[in-house]
Length: 185
Image (cartoon, rainbow, N blue to C red; front, side):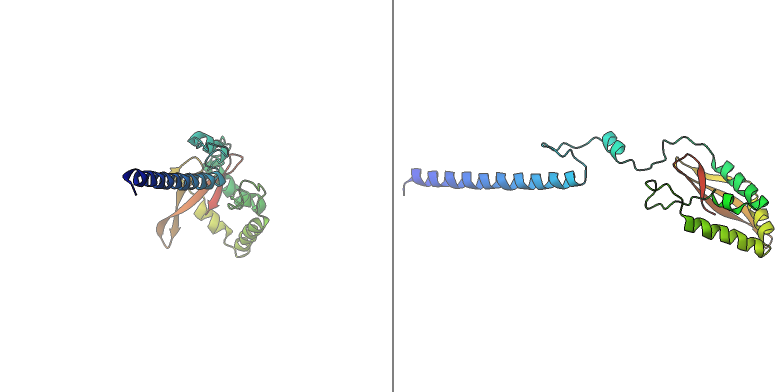
C-alpha cells in the first residue's frame, strides 16, 4: 500500500467518524429539545427556541392570586369571623376560612363542603360544651402582623392560659376573589 492510499483510507475513516459524531450530536440535541418541548419550556417548532421568563409566567402563573386586588384584609376577615361567632352564625363564620382544595385550586372554585361541615360541627360542639364564650374571649384580641405577602399572611394573638400569655399564630391566604381567608387558626 502506498502512502497516498493510506491517507485516502484514513481520510475516509476520519470523514466517517466525523459524520457519525455529527449524527450522534444531532440526535442528542433533538432528544434534548423534544424533552424540553414536552415540558413546554421551548417552542414546539424547529429551531425549538426557549420561551422568555415573561412568556412562561404568562403561560403558567405560579400564584393565581398575586395580581388580584384585595377586597377584604386579614384584619377585616378576622373581625368578621369574631362577630359571626358572637351572634352564633357558624355557617357564615366557616365561610371566613379558606375551604378550597389546594391541589385543584383555582380550577375548582367550589368550597370543600366536607371541610365546611366539619368546621360548623366543631363550632356547635364548642357551644354545646359551654366553651364558646371562652373561645371568643381568647380569640377576640388585637392581631399582631408577623408578615403579609401578596398571597399569604401570618398574624399572632396573645391567648391567656393558666395566667400566662402565649402567642398563637393565625395563617391567612388570599382567595381568587381577593378576600383574605383564615387558613389555620
